[in-house]
Amino acid sequence: PAAVGGSITGSDTVCIGSNYTELNLGGHSGTITKWQSATNSSFTLDLVDITDNTTATLVATDLSVTTFYRVEIVSGACTTYSATGTVTVSPQTVGGTVSGGANVCTGTNSTTLTLSGQVGNVVRWESSTYADFSDLIVPINTTATSYTATNLTTTTYYRAVVQSGACSEEYSLAASVI
Image 1 (cartoon, rainbow, N blue to C red):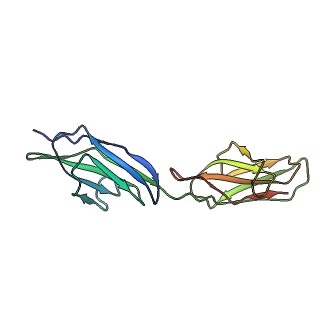
Image 2 (image 1 turned 90 degrees about the vertical axis):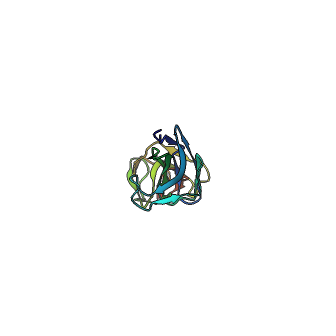
Image 3 (image 1 turned 135 degrees about the vertical axis):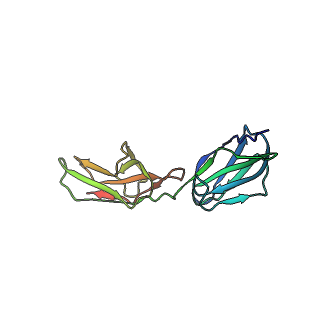
């Protein structure tokens, strides 16, 4: 009978470094002869035969690059491959630096702050009247890489919260509007 490749479930996005993903093959018909991994979806870059695992489950750990997986299925003289499973690896989050701090006159004022050097996306901005953000933190609902502070009546500090994929959030270095 014809071999049926089936499909892999468990594809995930993980943070670079210490990570863990369990992939499972289902819907196949035939004998699992090996898993394969590669760094591109056509399985032409960095192809690795994982011949010591002929089970329907593979645990991928500690990946540093996005990796694609498939399973070779054999039925008699027939050979086929499963659909591809992917473990996408996010780079480590870097908070970056907010620039544009200024001294302004109380009341009517406007200062544009800009985030640079970050790795990941802006989740939100935060402000506080404490330089160390130990209290009175106000979340600012914007995901842009710049923010305009207006009409301040007291010295206020601003930072961005950044996250890269599945990695943890990091804070940028703050800027002050005095």
